[in-house]
Length: 275
Image (cartoon, rainbow, N blue to C red; front, side, top):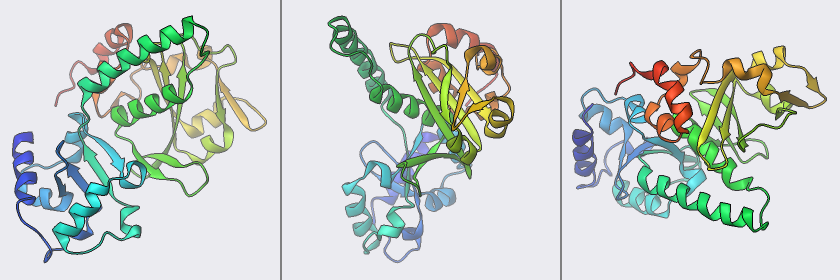
């Protein structure tokens, strides 16, 4: 699929209004950097070999309107289709867009330097919120996860297709001797468990992808908690196993945001992968 051709059709869609069409019913929109949108059904008709998986492989990611908010989209929608965006429709609307990876990478380097100063001055002793959100973003990029508002009190859940994914982020150069702590109820509700291990410099030092039923069957629990020790699951780490390498949809993101040592170990598993 030619991205230049895709972009030209998105621009063409925005050159006129479409109030007499059914495109207003779409709930997936492809987005250009300058906030130009086009519904998936339109691009499926116009772009030869249109395939969202190809876009995910090229670095596009999903975000829900419900998650990120976008006043510009509501105005665009009303202008394009001569109708208001209903709340029930907005809750289902997804964007597929390409992030500015250079800016993100530069920001990560800057944040790491700032954190080093604050740690050395004994001002902060952890940084849970930022690493967790960054690790979840990495998972979205690498596995093409869709983030949807939860029906529970958790906020947002992750999905691969119709499969629910529990994403756990571990920050630090070493894992706690007790292991990675998971809530049994959340594992039970999910189909997969993805563990993103971030080094202190915010780069990925390891990835582990497990089936939830395997976790519940294989590992003992203490009450409502499951502990996954490195010694028990290291055989499933991406650096050692290619079992779930087929779940990676954006190899470039995995390599780009991994520590050099991990990227080198992964090269063999993904050397034949192409766009």
